[in-house]
Length: 80
Image 1 (spheres, rainbow, N blue to C red):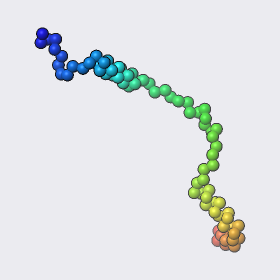
Image 2: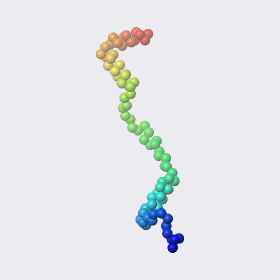
Image 3: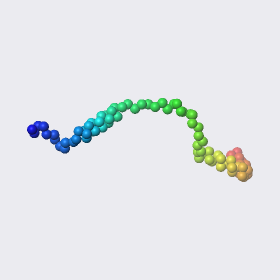
Image 4: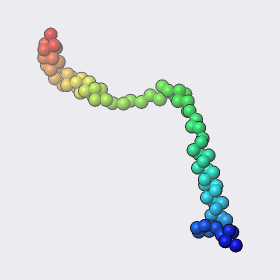
């Protein structure tokens, strides 16, 4: 009779089945190879405007030259 006793807490059949299924799913997920996605299909198809610091500086510079033409003249003289 002592041989037939289970050690520790005895779980219900549902709990043991659930644990078994979860263990199987975890094992399956661990050995699943990750598929390599082909990213070349959309490369270069999406164009968008992205303002950078240099782009903003160039726009500001154009406005400065338009508002005050002497600034452009002075910068050109300084560059010579």
